[in-house]
Structure formats: structure tokens, C-alpha cells
Figure 1 (cartoon, helix red, strand yellow):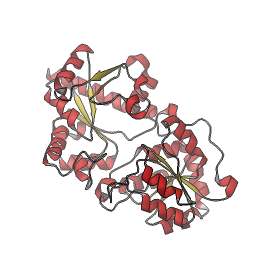
Figure 2 (cartoon, helix red, strand yellow):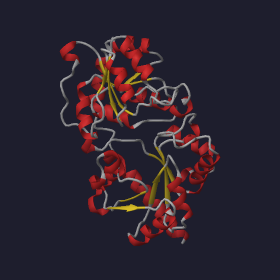
Figure 3 (spheres, one colour):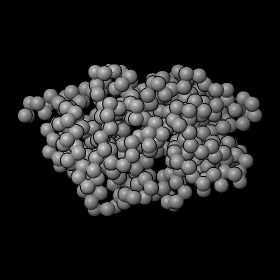
Figure 4 (cartoon, helix red, strand yellow):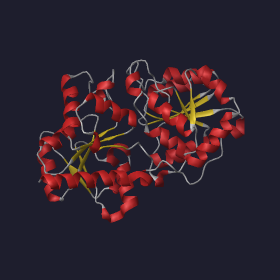
Length: 356
């Protein structure tokens, strides 16, 4: 969806973007997004290759850009034998996980899952990675050509950045208000989204933690109802959410590393860029790639424990970090960087024409 926003906002009708899918459209799944695409193409789960072949022919497709987790559709595009380049976009690597992906339907230890991951990375014409740590890992783990690779983080679209920032709740009550937006998992113990214990620790030191979830979660709602400092706000549409969270002081991006530490070390999540765009300094445990970004850009605080966090947020240094974040909140957008993706498309198309 963000790629479509970037292409539409930057190139208009010069680029057509089609969306091939198996289950639901973006609006059916997320509540928005369908209007960004020129056409939606429903694939047959039993024979996705046929649908991909027909789409390439009927719509004169130049590039197939397929996203991972799981890797099923990239494999289908490669196996279909289409004569256009196939790009595999790695948001993360399932083989690094110790817990099941998503709602538990994909087991990262399954032999077929691991083999498919290898196949799509080694057989695709190019690869895109959400961060440098992920690119280095894949390039070491599999036989890929780094010259056909691109690092493209989970930037925010310019049109989603709030134009005005709300007054801070802390200005009214003098207390610290932290916000978390995203997935919360209360079913898989040790999942990196198993955050209830961490939220409890934040509440225990009398800092407010406000929780906006990707999908309704009655368990975390009930837990929050028992706490004065934990607040469950449910789910909001993305644009409304980003406007709403500007009234908090910090954005939370620290995950549960009990079982998925290796995976977390090569992630740079959407929420990090969204917090910055909303003027919120980012709070994180020392997940390696995230730590590097936060410290290099000076857009937040990295710490090992909630006790250490309390000391950091009571220091004068918070004022300087806030100033830097406000200065940089328009810097990390898809539109500012989408030329790199278009350049990879053009390079792979030129290579394909030379071969054919």
C-alpha cells in the first residue's frame, strides 16, 4: 500500500499499479487502501500461477513486486515462467523466528517454509529489504546477487504525516504518556508481540502507556481496565491514528526478546517512522538495527530495562531529542525515496531485455 502511495504521489499516471491477492483486498482487510491501485486481481489459491500469467499478459505488466511472510506468492510468480522480472520484498525472514508467524498459521521451523524462503531469495531477479541488517543476513545466508538488491525501509507516506500536532496530555497533568501502536499478542507466550508484561512494568513506575492495536484484543483490554496507568484505545484507521497519537510524549518500539531476539535484531518497524512523523521520540530496547538507527539519527532513547528508561526520561536530554525529532519528522517518507525503487525496476527490466 505504501509503495502505491509513493508511486501515485510522485509519478501520477506515469506508473500503473495493480494488486494481485488471494483472500481480501486491502480495504476489506485494513479498512482502507483499495483506491490507490488501478486494478485488483483475485488469484485462485489452487492455481495462482495461472492468474499471474493472465495478469502479466492482460495488463502488460513490466515488474512483479511480491512481498514475503509467507513467501508463497513470490514462489508462484517465479514458477509461472513469466518473462518479466520478479522482485522479492523481505520485510523479515521467517527462519529467524522461534514462534509462529501472524496468527500462528505459519511455522518457521517447517521444512517447506524454510525451503521456500531459500528458493524465492535465490531465484528472484531482485530483492528489497526493510533494513541493512536484513540485507546482510540474506546475502550471507543465501546465494544472491547483491548488485540486484535494494534496502528500502518502511517509510511513511507524506500524505499520512499529521499537519498539526495536538496539545500534549502531559501539559495538563504533568505526567509522562507513552503510546504503543501495532500488534499485541496475548496467545503466544514469548512472542515478540507478547507485551503485556512490559506494559505492566511501565505502568508500575507510574508512566502512562496508551495502547492502539492492529486488531481488537479483549485480553489486553481487560488487563488495562485493572490499571490506572495502562489505557486500551482499540483500533483506529491509520490516518486518524497518526493524528491522535501526537498528543503523547513518546512512541514505544521495544519488543519481547525472550524467544525472537535474532529476528528483532534485524527489524526496523513501520511504527518507528510513524512515531517520528508524529513528533514522538522513539523508546526501544537495544534491538540491534533499531538501536543503530535511533542513535545515529538521534530520534529517541535506547535502554536495557524499564528502570533505566525512568532515569533517561527524567533527564534534561529529552528536550534536545524532541527538538531533533520535530526537525526530522518529514524526512523519512516514501515519496522522498521512491526513486530508488523505480531505479531498481528499470535496471531489472533492462537486464531482462538484454537476456531475451
